[in-house]
Length: 142
Ligand SMILES: [Cu+2]
Image (cartoon, rainbow, N blue to C red):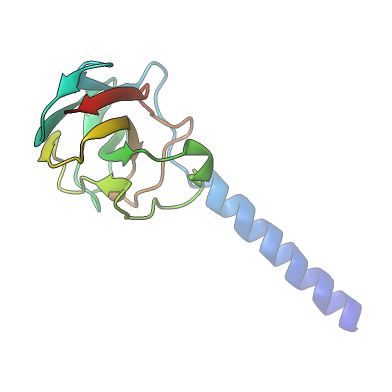
């Protein structure tokens, strides 16, 4: 009897994982995010204005569930390998949410080299499948 209950519980856990994964919103083919400015390799002074671009999808605020939309997240010096694409993105200094649907930010960055990358998230901050991720750019703040 004990075995049967354990098996049942394991089955539920697996079903739960599959359900969560199946719940990632699909991104349409050809959708892409990109950083309009600054240009890759640019030398800039702080504060820096970073402009977000999105093609093939629309921007919607967090909490608004609508197909083929999402909101931007700016990854600042964030290792992509540490991002869990299956879950809602954490909010940290390195993962900045634009849940209001903003498409640019003016922010202070310390002097030095910084890697910037955009990652779109759905109404619940979960990256789409496949993820809509910009190329990473590197800028130098004087
Ligand atoms: Cu978000």
